[in-house]
Length: 120
Image 1 (cartoon, helix red, strand yellow):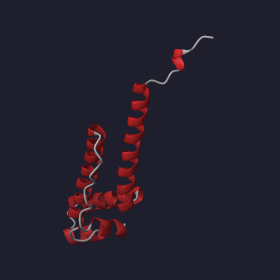
Image 2: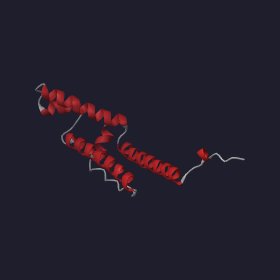
Image 3: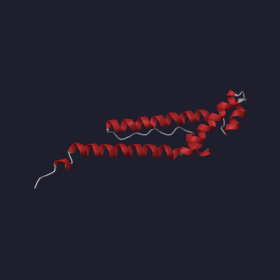
Image 4: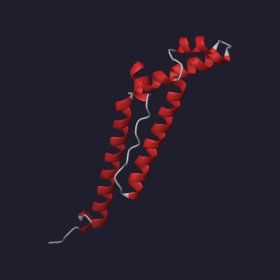
């Protein structure tokens, strides 16, 4: 009887599989945490509101009217920027945790961001 060593699972292969499973779990957790604040549809709606606002401003529409046309209110643009920065921080923490092998330390959702998402 001959043993087919090509079928053997090495310690290195096991470690690679475990690292891949861990990375996938961290990425999944990161995505779920972001989507818990605002779904992909919510995020697209906010982005589109920003586009409508900017188009109106570029057309010379007064700021208050541009906000109204976009469905935004005063302060929403800053909240959208905070949201974008938070998502980038979440993604950076995801990468850091995967690279270092440490548990992720997720950044807190900025105040007001969840309220913005709820409106869209």
